[in-house]
Length: 282
Image (cartoon, rainbow, N blue to C red):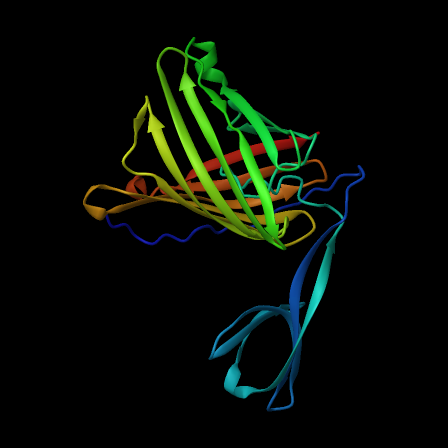
């Protein structure tokens, strides 16, 4: 199945919030460059990307592209960026988990779309257990429940591997299991993940699983960018896609996630659906 390429998201950050409570200082490493041009001009800033033809940097004047053939010399150096507010939930994007484990002895309460409530707890530095329920289905007598164990391990610097499951069901009606494995590269503030999920529905193995690609990137003391993308094969080797893209507004012990859910098969009728969730860590 083919679908149009849709811009992932366009948004304006209206505000960010901070907390007066104590927080551990967060750090992230970036590469800074000093560039001398053949015409005598000099530029410095944070390196965003570089290829054979151009080098892209960001500084106080914004982002700029410089032509490599016009560059005389480039000096590289690493720098540490300090944030007074650390990311309180680097274990999760919007919905999908990273391979970074939850912190030991901490609870993570998440409310999504007002009606979905979940609670995760870090049992050890590598293992956690979570669960939750959907409010409306519970009120009408058919409660949808969720159980979500997870294991995450740091393999080496900036690289984690994780596995876990989502068990979803309605008592006496149906039960589904989603087993996943994830690899995450990066820091708690900025990282990317690649994962795969298999599905068992009512004790039958689903023929097609999911591939997840996601990431988060810290852009200021109170704001991160998030993207979460899912791919699944259809019959006749066709591929389906949907994704959530947006921002995370951070404080020391909580965050709000605002995004748009894009499903290309319905984009002609519904271009995007809103996504909102709140997480509190205690």
